[in-house]
Every structure is written in C-alpha cells, then in structure tokens.
Image (cartoon, rainbow, N blue to C red; front, top):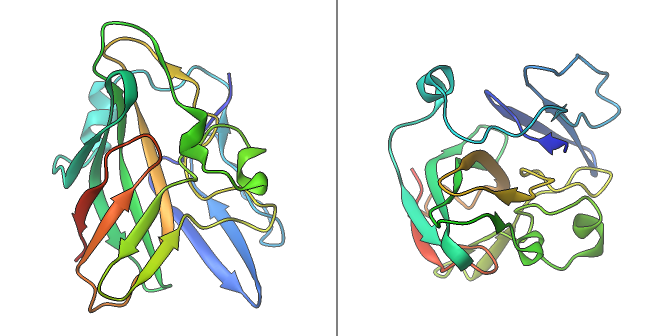
Length: 190
C-alpha cells in the first residue's frame, strides 16, 4: 500500500497561473521545480506514534472532529505562511474496536481529486463573516495538497495527515472546518 504524506513540512509556490509543489520527506529526492513532487513511502503507513515520531508531533490540539464508525480527526496546528497559504496538520485515528475504512466521501466529489485515491481533498474552511469557502489546494496535475491514498485504520491506530488551503485574510481569526462525513467545528487561526 502506498501512502503519500509529508514529514516535516510542505511548501507550495504559485508560479504564474500554475502551482508547483515541492515536498520534503524521508524518502524524497530533490526534483526540478517544473514538475510537482509527490512524496510516497512504500512501507506500511505509520499506524501509531512511535517515540521518534512523537517528538516531531505538535502536542497542542486545536480541535477534534468525529466521523463515522469511530474515526476522529485531531488538528494540532494551523499555520499561515508568507506565501498566502494555511497548512493544517494533525492525526486521523480509529477509536473503535474494529478496522474502519476511510470513507471515499472525504475526497470530495471533484473528478480530478477523486482519481488520486481516497484523501482529505473534500475538506473546506468556511469564513462566514467574509462569506467565502476555501478548498484544499491542488497541484498542476489535479492532486490535492493533502494526505492521499488513505485506506483503513485498525482498532486504536492513527496516521498523520495534512491539508493546505489558500489563507483567509489576516483579519479572519476563526473559520468553520468541514470535512465530508465528519462533524463541522470552529477552528481558530492565528
């Protein structure tokens, strides 16, 4: 099973009308900026936090949303960057006693996103005061800038996830985080 995820960070640069992505990861090799970089690891996904991964993970929890059949998504950081993006990082966990498949609805319904496997590409940030909805960014090949190839989680298991959005204006300090099949929740942005 291939799992795409980024360990350490993710940078995106808008170049003219296209978006080029450079990923950083344990198995990533430097690539030229003319093609998006997708970080994949052929081994099993991180099923649970190990001691070394625990040191890398943020300890603060900004919000926890509950999904179907015991799935829970904890958002640990919501960081704005100077390039005009906001990146959410967290953990998708299975709090049930059985194996739970990640619902395909979490990918959203856009054809370009869905063809890249089950992901969190259906996530949105809603600025109700500014009356705007922000969707997960996509690279030039239509891949969502989020964890992809999500499959299933065993009982008590979890995996790290990320999502990258266009940043709302600096004056927007609170948005509604929405992910299909999960309850919506208020997320504070700094």
